[in-house]
Length: 266
Image (cartoon, rainbow, N blue to C red):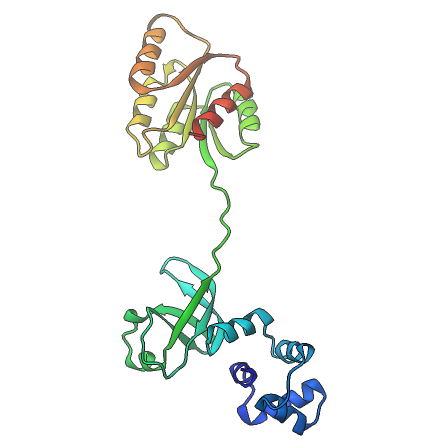
């Protein structure tokens, strides 16, 4: 096994004895006995040789216990992302074909599906993979995208300050047209809308949200005006478009955030 890992790490077979003797500071005869199995290895000697070839003891014992011939760091790809991995190669002469194969290009190893190797030269040079250990990336938590629409800057800034401290990404708007242009490009996960912006209500905007790619997004409405036709439109929005609210301004920012948290915890 020691000879195998020395070869794997680039030490020519004819130099194994000399290399081992130099690392352990023992005679050539003593090194030969170690490698031939005539002399037992001390744990400290084994560790010293394995570390000298820049190999982890865990990898060495993996080779020993799984009867693999080589272990290498490699790159695995699904066509979209490349991930680092560790490959455990089986004997070169084995006839069984494995689902994934290893190819060495220059000094780097790559994992490919065996049935995707069309080049005959590459197919002949492939190595069978007995075990494959992929190191998945740690993904950052995806923040929910929130749109706030209000023509009062102080309210917008206050809500954004409270909401964006947590797991939300907040975009702010002061005009209906600006927010509608943005949702046409990339709809949001939730909307906080002042019912009246200038001389218009957001009733038609709510209908557009319900027709967007994220038609089930949360829509929370704020208002300081609840009379006449506005009141009728809000009632229509509540019953037909599933809005949350309306909440009369001024409204506590923590109440808005609690509604968002509750909605996204479902």
